[in-house]
Image 1 (cartoon, one colour):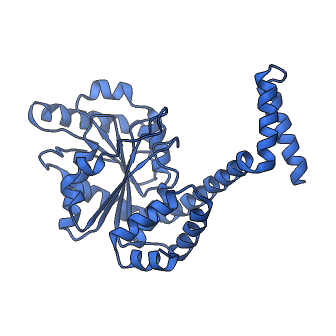
Image 2: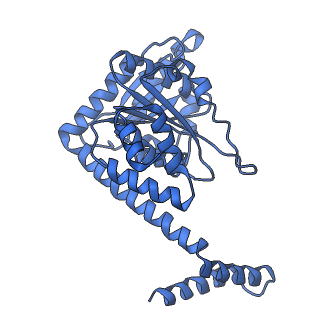
Image 3: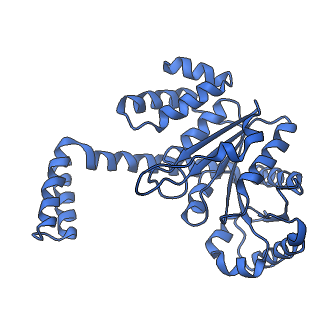
Length: 325
């Protein structure tokens, strides 16, 4: 497909063209990357969407929760895109990419688009092109975009840097959870949800929610005048899902009123530019013919014990700086 055909199909909300466009931007081929840049330039704009990042400890029920939330949003007339990131095997490079099977009901809806993508060695719980994929979904008319991360750790910070609202999911049993959760993660949370508030765990879930709320009272607010929301849900039974969407909407509304949302998206665009520029620099560093020869020479010296890695790195940097000066 040409760039014009892809752009036209996206603007008409066609899922097939959206899938093809994401495949294009995820491709590492130079020709595909040139086409991808053309497409992104055509579609670049400020879309009136809600971007939600969802993360949580393993086993918290993210997929079940996202499916329940997605179904509620579709009932309310929204179009929902889910960008679910699966970790790639460090040895084989393969991924399970099973989110469509875990969200079967949502995947079958015409108003939903689910795209599982491998991390392919990218750190931070997101793929290299998650931001671009999000833009393509928005251009295709999806007014709520959900990014599901691979778990806890660096992924929280990476996802929080590209969404409007960052939602963290926790399990019942606050005592253990409070000890395990990092202060830094608490500081970037906008909505905290304790899931699996059903059966014998319902009481524990509500107790955990209250304890998290008390803990947050000790922290400096992320945004002055905007409070973090704390909820208990049962994604399995569909309890509390409407309340979560209400909390997200209220948070976004407050962000718009205060001007924080405009500032946030501007900062995200600048961060995006910085990361893409760094990627291009690294690409040219390792893959241009001239640099490949230099790297080969330095690697050989390191392997033979003739040069330390730090000296080799300094020599490489110096030679590259001389070439560019």
